[in-house]
Image (cartoon, rainbow, N blue to C red; front, side, top):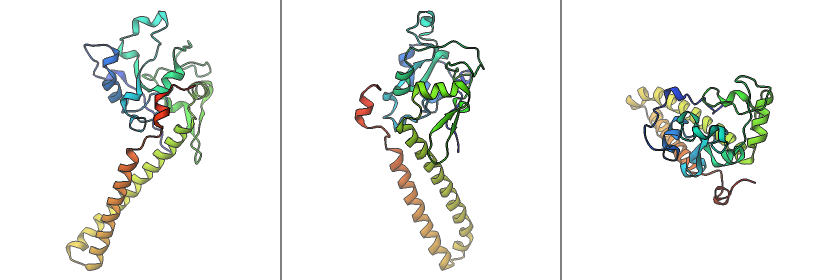
Length: 220
């Protein structure tokens, strides 16, 4: 099962030269490929960028980190649910110490490496203490995320089926050119099926996994 988290490589980012963190959400969204750095949900399933936050990895409300308020290397793209659960909490630990609870720097580590996705039920379990801490603190097995993982797996399967159908159509092309009636018939049927798949995909991609009420309120 493919994991959707990624390391946010800040060295490859085009950093803004003016403005402040409130202006930089579009750039942060682009470098994160539209995903929450913590739970990996796509913003298109969460009401768009308006329901995502600019996350201060080292919280700006903690005095020792206040100077990082507009430091682009300290900023990440996060859904409002994960960002609210994380809030201003902070735990110090050495990089690479996975037996001490803390938030690993998403610019240095792929969060997907801290979790394993359970087949069929789509919950995640943690690798080492850090993984379990992140799951518990950020509630990474909340219902919507389980549904999202199942949903993305279904989309991946759609893509695989679509690719196989495309290959079959390519093999039929020489027969269609020779005007073999049976081949033409199958080619048309497959083409219609492809269009149905595309329509289903478009419908899924416009669907939010959260209700309007859930998007308006902070998690408890």
